[in-house]
Length: 211
Ligand SMILES: Nc1nc2c(ncn2[C@@H]2O[C@H](COP(=O)(O)OP(=O)(O)OP(=O)(O)O)[C@@H](O)[C@H]2O)c(=O)[nH]1
Ligand SMILES: [Zn+2]
Image 1: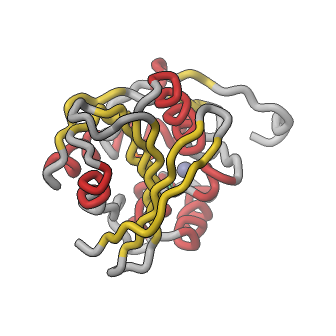
Image 2 (image 1 turned 90 degrees about the vertical axis):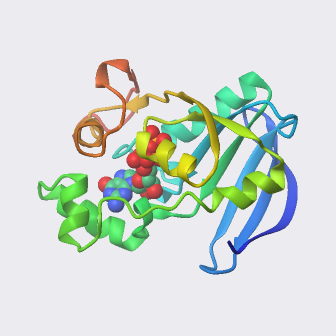
């Protein structure tokens, strides 16, 4: 594994002031980040989120997916607990990259679902790797995670990479008219452990005319 710690700093957010740890993946040239709060190296399982980059959802307020909502909710829950970790992994578009994700969105605009769109572009449905968390967890001294996710394949992949996932904590937030079909496809085809009835819906503010 070629993940190298580079530097750490404070990161004030609306929910808490986290410590931001920056890592470099020498093999891919990607930068990854871990935000921590409290003492995460005390040996007790740590409330955690392993979040894959979604520029559109995390930074541009996209309602096509649930990523931005999950990111905010995870940070809020860690802040409420006073202790936790969020990994922000630069594997945009389930690993196909931003521009291919836009190509996939174009196909979805024409009726494909999120899995079919990836496949039509010649990609598997999900190309992400989670073993890159191992050196970051070791660096931070984290022994075990209480992982906020609905994705059982993420739990399996982390466990297979040798990470102790002590518990899965559901993270069902962000349901809206633009991502309802996407979330159904995740549950139906990608195996996410969630039903739409469990979700906290979000209100649209100024986009009511254009579903
Ligand atoms: N290729 C592709 N990637 C997408 C699409 N929508 C979101 N993503 C990416 O999917 C990743 C998030 O995956 P999700 O399946 O929502 O979440 P997860 O992390 O696997 O599961 P949770 O832990 O339950 O959130 C991010 O990298 C997004 O950029 C899409 O339609 N196509
Ligand atoms: Zn997203």
